[in-house]
Image (cartoon, rainbow, N blue to C red):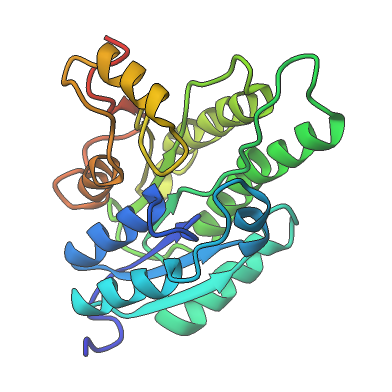
Amino acid sequence: MPQPGSRPVVLVTGVGRSAGIGAACAVALAAAGWDVAVSWWSGYDARMPWGADPDGVPGVERAVVAAGGRFVAVEADLEHPRTPSELFDAVTAALGPVTALVLSHCESVDSDLRSTTVESFDRHMAVNARATWLLVKEHAERFAGPSGTGRVVALTSDHTAHNLPYGASKGAMDRIVLAAARELAGLGITANVVNPGPTQTGWMDDALVASVVAQTPLGRVGRPEDAAALVAFLCSDAGGWVNGQLLCSDGGINA
């Protein structure tokens, strides 16, 4: 078992399902030499069509430990403004100071301009934008590592039509994270956003998969591991010169 402090600590949010991008990021980062903390919110998965994944967090834990990393999971409702501070408290107490923050959580309930409710819009903004700001702020206020080692990476989407509150809140999230690349320059924390394109995490039916495959130059849909590979690179020493970027890792569908 690794000794405390022998590996850097990464906090990955949104790791409730084994099929998700967050889970793939956690596993890839453990394989790359990180101790891993994850957060998730069971209430979100329970009210979504795919339902809860009872083996999601335990499965990630097994993979992280098998890769030699320490692991902690903290259930966290990011709709509440106090949660980011409480989450960092719990992770720091369990594993030590956080070096990298990977933001894979989201609220995502489809609705368009006319059907979106104020309640839904506000919840999307609270989880996807406000919580991102507060998590990045918490990371910056606590970070004491060597300049150039700190990381923030967020997962985004350019889907807005008929998914208005999700797309609008992700757009706000992008601006928050990219601003951090400048505002956290004194700490030497890099901040980047990754757009993984259409990625099959269980939400696409056969017809949508066929449509995406037909539009994508590489002839397939995205896999969570595709996004995780880029996130792991951005968190590595080799990725330290990439900063303030919104990177598309989408198989060329937007080319």
